[in-house]
Length: 561
Image 1: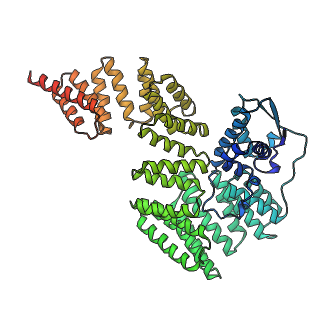
Image 2: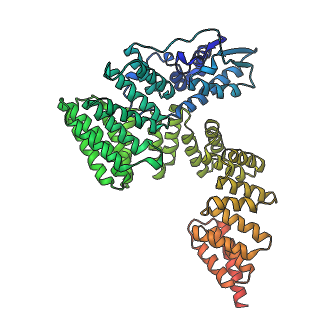
C-alpha cells in the first residue's frame, strides 16, 4: 500500500489513483461521499460505468475540472488520514515525470494532509522503468479518446503527438487525422488554440479528403468563434469556415448523415448570430435543426444531439428575454443528462433571475455534489445566502470556493465584506491581503482594504486613490475617500468626490453623504435637494429614512432662519 509509481507512462493520476482506491476500500462510507471525484480519478471503482470514450457527451469537460477533482480527492484523503491511529508513510515515485493531473493532485494533497498522521513522500525518481505509450492504431485511438472524454488534456495531447509521429498522411490517413484533430482539440482546451489552428492548416495542405476538410473547416470556425485569444477571435472568419463546412456536407453520400452534419454545423451559425445581436435568426436555425433531426433520427437515437440543440436554444431564449422557455429547454436537457453539473448551474441562474431563490440554492447544491466542487457554484450559492441573511452558510461557501480556486477574486471580495459586516477586521484584512498577493492592483480589494484601515482609524486615503486609478467607476472608493477627507476637514474635496459617486449611482447613500457635506459648507438649498432625492429612492431602511428626514428638517430650519 505504501509505494506508488506516478510516471506519466501509466496515464493520468498514475500512482495517486491507486492510493485513493486503496483507502476507498478501507473507508467505503467515506468514499461514497466522494464517489464523483473518485470515479473520475480511478474509474475502475465504478463497476457500472462504460469506458469514457464510448460515452457521447453533449460537451467536453472544461480543463479547470481537474483542479476541482484534486480538491475533493484531497478532502477525502485528509478525512481518512485524520482518523489514523498511528503514523503512515506513503511514497510516490517518479513525480518529476508525473502527468499534470497527478502533479496537480499532489500539490493539493501534501499540504492538506500535513497535520495528520499521514506522511507523504513524493520522490522525483524511482526504481522501475515506465511503460511506453501504445503503438497499435486501435490502442492509440482508444487512449486518445479516453483522455479527451475524461478531460485529461495534457495526457491526450501527448498520446496524439505520439500517434502522429508513428504515421504519415500518405501511409495511414485515417490514423493521422484522428491524432491530428485529437491533438488540436486538446490544445484548444488548454488555451493553445493558435497551435490548433496551425494543425488544421496542415491537414488541409495534406489531403483533399472532403470529410476531413469538412471537419477541419468546422473546427477552425470554432477556434475563431470561441477558443482563440480575444484579440484574434474573428466572427467573419468563423462564418467563412462554417459556410465551407456546410458546402462540403452537401457532398456526403448518405442523406441522413448529410442532414445530421448540416444541422450540427448550422448551430455554429446560430452561435454567431446570437453573438451578433440577432437571436431571432439564431432561434430559427435551432428550431429548424431540431425539426430536421427529429425527422431523420429513430426514437431514442442520438439523444445527445437533440439535447445539445435544446441547450443551445435555451441560451437563445435567454437572449430574447424569454426565461420560461429557456427553463423548459434546460429541464429537458437535464432529464437527458442528469449527471452534468454545469446544466444545474445554468438552471440555477434562471431560477435566481425569476426570484425562485430556494430552487436556485437547490440546483447549486446539486451542481456542487455532481461537479464536483465547482467554485462558481459555491460562490453563487453564497451570494444567495448573503441576500437571505444566512451569513454563516455564506462564509462557509465562500471559503470552499477559495480553497478550490484561491484566485477567485469575486469570492475573495465577498468573503472580506462578510467579515467586515460582522466586525471581524483581522479576518477581513487577512483575506484582503491574500487576494492582493494574487492581484496587487485589484480596485475592489484595494478599496475594501482601505475601508478596513479606516475602521481602525489608520491612514487609508492612498488605498482609495489607488483603487480609483484602476477603476474610476468604483462608487465605494469615491464615497469612502470622501469620508476620509470630510473627517479631516477637507469638505470641498469631499463634495467633489461625492459628485462623482452621485453621477455614477442612484443609491441614496452618496446623496445623503453629499447633503451632509454641503450642509457643513452652509449650502442649504443643495443639501436639501440631495436629502429629498435620497428620500425618494425605494427600499430605504427605517434608520436611514429617519436620518434623512431629520437632516432635511435641519436644512429647512437653517434656510428659514
